[in-house]
Amino acid sequence: AQTVTQSQPEMSVQEAETVTLSCTYDTSENNYYLFWYKQPPSRQMILVIRQEAYKQQNATENRFSVNFQKAAKSFSLKISDSQLGDTAMYFCAFMREGRWIQKLVFGQGTRLTINP
Amino acid sequence: DTEVTQTPKHLVMGMTNKKSLKCEQHMGHRAMYWYKQKAKKPPELMFVYSYEKLSINESVPSRFSPECPNSSLLNLHLHALQPEDSALYLCASSQVLADKPYEQYFGPGTRLTVT
Image 1: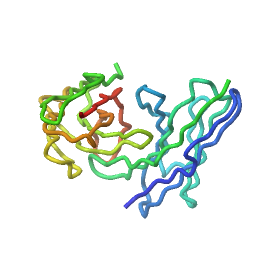
Image 2: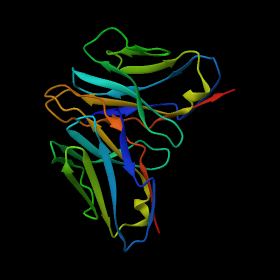
Image 3: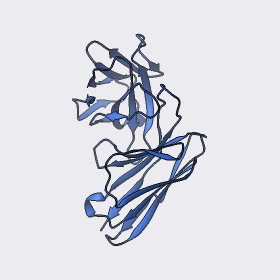
Image 4: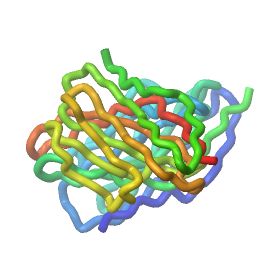
């Protein structure tokens, strides 16, 4: 079974700083997908970024980028120039590749607070 | 339209009540999901429908009964719930293609309180 571990329950940084959220996972699969989801307080969960395991290039989406280390089974999220609106719970998630429906396996989450 | 809607936003029910949660999406997605989320915890998968057929049931108690009337709608019927069932119930949807997982789009959730 796959597991996802986020070792930082809470983090807090000042606005405009760069912050990195850690995620490690355990799997025996070779092909899989990794995701970071953001859940702001009392708001909907949205996808921040996704990474296919077969791609060596790290995914980026504007101020969000990942450091994907397949051999180390590590998938960290870097937020540059952090903004107040980045305050949220961040979940790292794993999905194996396979036919049809595959489950998302979530980490326990990191609560990120951006301070003005 | 990349929106999943859920009604009601909040629901308070007694342990003997029967109520339903509703979810709707118009993105043409053929997979729909119910999750339960406790405070400060990740979502826990409950059910998955694929092409209007139940494909995953994560051993959820029978007091939760899902229904998928058509490709856009997903219901969760609740009956004889316990106080520990109080949680945020999230609906999600995604495309379905063989061998290619697609990201799930989440609704805002229904905050359920069982008294």
